[in-house]
Amino acid sequence: MINFPIYLDNHSTTKVDPRVLETMLPYFTDFYGNASSKSHEFGWKAEAAVEFARKQCSRLVNCEPRDIIFTSGATESVNLALKGAAEAYASKGNHIITSIIEHEAVLDTCKNLEGRGFNVTYLPVDEFGLVSPTELEKAITPETILVSIMWVNNEIGTIQPIGELSEICREKKVLFHTDATQAVGKLPIDLAKMHIDLMSFSSHKIYGPKGAGALYKKGKIPRVRITPQLDGGAQEKGLRAGTLNVPGIVGFGKACEIAMTDMAADQARIKELRDRLYAGLTAGVENIKLNGHPEKRINGNLNISIKNIDADSLMISIKDIAVSTGSACSSESVEPSHVLTAIGIDNKLKRSTIRFGIGKFNTAEEIDYAIAKITEKVKYLFSILPDVKRNRKGDHASV
Image 1 (cartoon, rainbow, N blue to C red):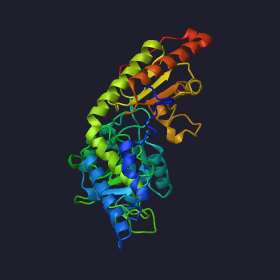
Image 2: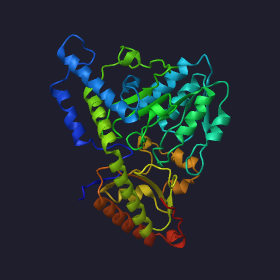
Image 3: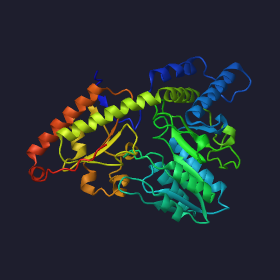
Image 4: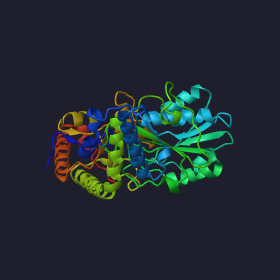
């Protein structure tokens, strides 16, 4: 079955699962109370729904429900984690470490902290986008108070060695935060067995609604301290002021529950579709380069560059397939991808890059249609561009 237009941009956002929507609807029309209202049944039911969702979210990542702080999304969670921890531990040092391929939520927050007197080290990555544990260990100084490394890169899908990186930080007594927005619901995560102090994640990347996210803050002794970043209320144990988005949180919880139940089957099927797409494209199109790690990547990610083809022009000409030719969160920027720059892709090849984000609602028929359509358009462009004809030897990597 093919659903037009075909949506292959599931790293940007995902369709709300119908089961999630069904769970949310009563909280718009029937149980619409404020979760902070303690004097009547409407408030009690809203509060109970929030706490149930907190348990659902905690089960997906195996932590205590009390360690989940609800926010408006991963960007707010990142800001609360990084700014909150930097302020809380400023008396111990002023050095923060991150990587050069982080999402703008982390990079811009670090720039903000630099403006406030904190020193930030931006670790390089290798050609696959991996951070070196050795380089992290070398970068830690007596002034280091916080390290933030994303679990999965949102553009190239590379999975970082989070267990090893977080263990280094534990040994050095440095806080470790990870932006797990692209990892939660796609990879098994067991926070009870890991040395992660803070973790940000979001609802709309796992078939939940937009406007809901969470920050995991380790509650075990020694407890992690953060300072709140919003004034105006004592919600979320005083760490996040503002009326809670009850329908969004309810949907987030349901999405986490579904992810926990269906992850293994969904991810196996998504990997099959991703491999089918890559095999089909490389069979029909020359000059394809795979970006990111060929094995250490999430199943739904395929990031490729087609040499001598302008990706924007190509995909605009194919109006019934939705993909990203860069990071969707920064698509208004004319600057080339900082992630592709970091892994050594030149500017010309960056403009030839397409990111496919395959999700659980995609079908084999949609993948086959995308292969045929893209192959047809690329071959047409090859046939009319003289410089392309002269240089058509490609480098195909396996995935």
